[in-house]
Length: 371
Image (spheres, rainbow, N blue to C red):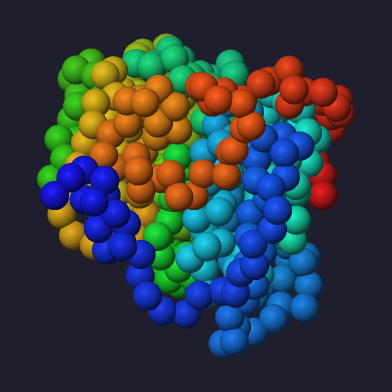
C-alpha cells in the first residue's frame, strides 16, 4: 500500500460520522491569498441562538491566538472546527492578537472576516508589555514569543460575561464535533480540563536545581502531578478569575527569572499551578507532538487509540514541511483544512508587507476588539 493511500485511509478513519452542519462552496477569494471557506450552517437538530453576542449562554466559546506567522495554521484550525461541528453557528471565536504584530490586529480581523464571512468572533489586542518582562529564554526561540503567554490572561482579556472557554493552539485540527469537548464536566473546584499523561517523565520539565530545593519542589508533594499539554484546555473562567490564577502563574515566572527552574517556555508555570489538580479529558482530544521534538522537529506517529484532535506541537509545522516538499506522513491529515491558495507557483510564504498594507496598530489595551 503506497503512502498516499495510507494517508487517505487514515483520513477516512479519523473523520467521524454523524450530524454535520450544512455547507455551500464559494468562489476563491484572492485578496490575501486565502480561499473563502464553505458556508457552514446548523444542522436540523440545532437550536438557533438568535444572537451573535458573546454573552449568549447558548454559545460554544473558543479562544485562540492570531498572528501573521501562524495565521495559516489558525485559519486551518477554525476551518476544521466548523467543518466537523454539528451546530457551527453556535460557535463564538475569541481571537487574541499581539499589539505589534507585523500585520496589525485590524488587518488580521479583515482576513478572518474575508475567509469566514458569517463567523461569530472578536479580535482582542494583547499588550505584550503585560508579560514581556516576565519571559525568560527557552529551549527554542519561538517559545519566547509573548503571544504564547496570552493564555495566562484569558480571564482578563475575554468578556467577563463568558464563564467557560475552550483554548486551542494554532497548530491543531479537529476531526470531531467540538460540542463533545465543550460538554466536558469540570468537577468540584477544578479550573482546567485537559488530557493528562501520567506515564511521562515529569521530572524532565524542571531543572535539577528546582528538584534539589525543597522549598520549591514541595509544590508537588500534596498531589500526584501528571504532564498535560496546554494547547488544548477547557477552562472554567469563573473559577480562574475567583482564584486569581493569573497571579499564581506570574509568581512562578518571576521565580524562573531569578532561579532558572525550567527550560520550556509557557508550559511549566501551568504545570506548577495545575498539575495534579486537573479534570482529565480523554486523550483523543489532544494527539500532540506531531511537530516532533523542540530541536529536530522529526516525524512522529499517532498515539494508540481514537483521534478527535490532531496537534502539531513541537518544532515542525505541517504547512512549512508541505511547502518545503518534505512532509511527514501525518502532515497530509492537516492539508484538507488548508485554505491558503496563492496563484503563484513555488514555496508558499505569507507576505507580511502585504498583510500590513492597511490599518494601524491600536493601543487601547488587550480587551479592545474589532468586528
